[in-house]
View 1 (cartoon, one colour):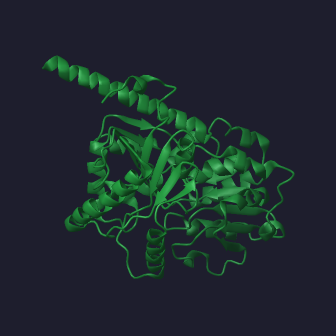
View 2: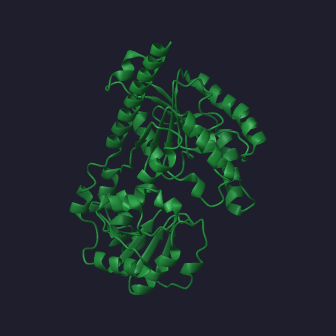
View 3: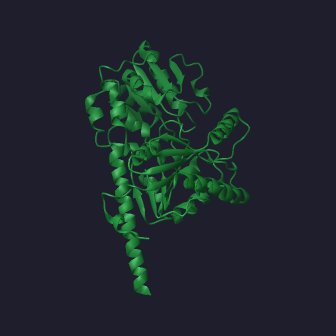
Length: 401
């Protein structure tokens, strides 16, 4: 039902109940985390942890994740952030017809129970994951949002059903929001009401790298200079052979990789100047950035990378670092990074970046207009457009009667 305040820009996405289907809340802060924290200032949010986008196997990583999911379910509904409540769902880690039917029934009932406990009415359903398709739109929603920040079908091990679920969700959505122009082109076949809202950055957090009060993290403070750094999940989309080439090209430098490892490290074997520091808290990243001379964005060239909008690039820049990237379209569109178009060129771009190393206020200031608050305002405008579009559609339908 269209209501007058749907057309008041000051009231869009304020005073609402939002059911958000996303990654697990306790993971590293992602775009979804930043957006929902801001929306929780003016709305109530039920954050539903991930159902996953692939079938688990018997690997140690997946067994650990299953154990974590069981513990998450046992914790029940809890408020993890002001006005933001987290639910660990019970669901089958499968995507066939029977599994989707069971999940639609059992998973939906869990979400409805949590909504009743919180007193949610006419919620906005906001999905970042195709796996929510069996439930999104079946909760009495007033609005259905599909917010796509990755090309899910391009992840290794993704079952074919995920593409079908995404298509179903995107077609039914009132609005589709994407983080990259390439994603817009890919999803336009499902929905004509599609808006590009690129990632923002927590500038206040990462610009601490420029503060005299921020020390260089002790784990890299005494490493041989220059320090060439990377942070983020180390998965199969990170070109470790290219990282090794950089390490070999600068044997007196230190190549530092920060993040959880989910792929083979064979390309780095025997490299004496590569330092793998594992996962580190988000709060510590500015102190690592302060010790970096150059930051790397070494993605492999595939559809996943070409459709991505790497959040870490804006974080590197907010910290004032020179960035060298492989040719990812959204990184090139920023116009602020050096682009290596071949392995040899990548090495030369690192060499050029080292002529102006470390955090720079000018580079950091270039990100001042890219705040998450500014991105949420873009989202509000997309929702306002959606309500207006709905009103026009209803008026046209009445005129045809």
